Image 1: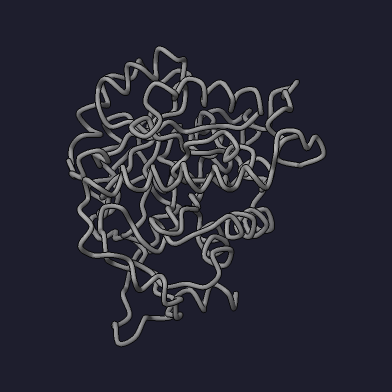
Image 2: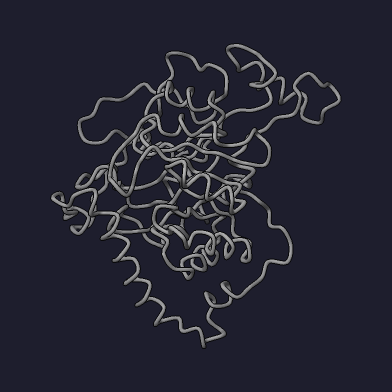
Length: 349
């Protein structure tokens, strides 16, 4: 389509990259050695504020300063939505108890399970045989399961302060292209100072993704410190939110419970064994295991692999790995370690 062609336009003088689309072929089995992540360059100008991202701010300060700023922003925002206003859509969303189980679109998108490819009576027999044929080395486990591919849509990153990773004007167009190419879910970053996004982009992405896929999930990522942000996510129509254990600390359980009450799925981001244990005790079922230590501003490339053994079996838990995943080899290693999928940001943005 014209939109996808636009997305594939090279940025400035970069030569065209011959990249194999991994968005539809990430599996537990080995991927072809020649595979590489799709690189998409979409050159558009950004506002001057985006270019003024402070480069001298230390990584260690970022998380605390950003959290304090977000608390202040939410305090001011809530003045516009006083709890006494019972007609306010955000107050309605926060006070609404979900009486029935939702569509669970996020969970379904993050765990890509197939039927037995050898059962000719299965309703998806032909499709499963086709999936089997794509595998370089066939085995029952890899035939019934492939890794979910999640694209993290953002202009900036906490891990690279002072650098603009990608310039784009229309987050909805980016999301539409990614999902059309096979992404199972997209993450939309809302905090402008940290990621370069806002709530209007979340709504645009929800609309764009629903247009091209009934199954792909839209996940909101923000520095969530106030429950009114959960109401914003619900009101925008997204499928789930990311709760950072390092940011919420002892308040995490309260936010997990609030999401359940509102019928909003959540991914709990963890980095340490203690955070994993605490979340398991809260009966959290969806985990985003990060290689990035937000509190200390440090990157540990094998942290997700080290924590893989803490999750009991492959039962009801969904585990997604994230943080600096830039090559097929990294993705293969994490899928083999037992993760249901990976999040890739900088490598495709």
